[in-house]
Length: 400
Image 1 (tube, rainbow, N blue to C red):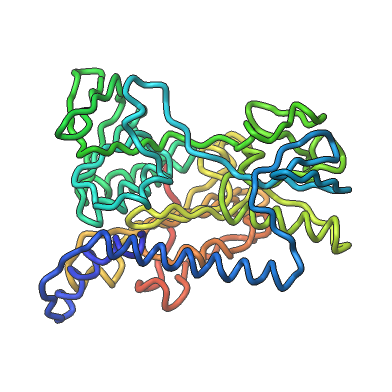
Image 2 (image 1 turned 180 degrees about the vertical axis):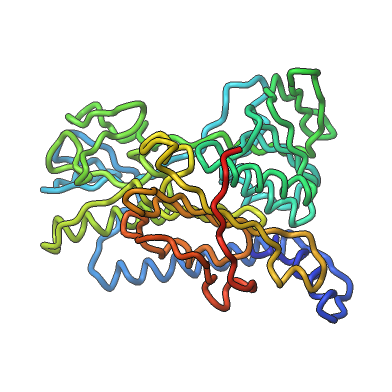
């Protein structure tokens, strides 16, 4: 869906490079069918890997009967070591009429493209879907409780992305609370309260609730074990071990850093440590993170606010560059890139790096932990040819 949503900008850029772009139409059912085909293909690949590895798969829910026994379907299974990796699920806020909304999981099963989507929530899932659906041609309204999206990310990033989303046509209603939703023949009417007024908007039978996720623990039978649950998540130590020494948990069910690559890495470390004689620890403080807004964003390490809190503002220097990449200058499109380094003065060390703009984010995820970075270079050369821009000087920035 992210790739599909980028084509309108690419069509516009193509004309600036001399290409004649003909009639452009988007067909939602075609995309959904293609996504279903690809998911089926990937599932087949993973099932084949499990089969070749001799892994027995039980297509049932599992429930603990005691610390060593699981009820799986009509069978009882015992094990010396048990790993819990059941993930999380989207949650809907307690709002009158919330039953008329869908979640981010449901969007892939809509038979037709929604013409007007109201998105509740300003986190990365809500912001990503706002950009995706806007790029595919839907009218998008995003309702957030604060004045900025993406709480917890760098403030400069939040401002840049929010401004760009508005420029692309996403209607963001800030400092707002949803009061109620009512289903009618025309769709779902959403009533919103802001500091200045109440607003009413109509979504065509769909309103996307993207207000967070919770660990999938409610059917696990944890009450039959000694596993402790803290704030709705399974409590684990740095080795992914629960309060029952032979039971482990990784991924969103622990509610630490809820990202797919993090869950994969935690699972790999668990397997290597417990069965491969290669012990390791997961560093949750310096995880490269990608957000698939339009344009995309990548960040690793500390934000400016976090670095100031840890080391003191007087010991932190900010290096920043904001420019328009060459890819957009030729077709004269208004699209900017922001690069930002968070640097400690003594000892000289880079503790955070942020990029917003055109860059393959899968590459960004592979970059090193900032705790290993040395002194910053005066000139930044983007990974060629992934970013069509010349080297940029990163200038020290004042506080403002």
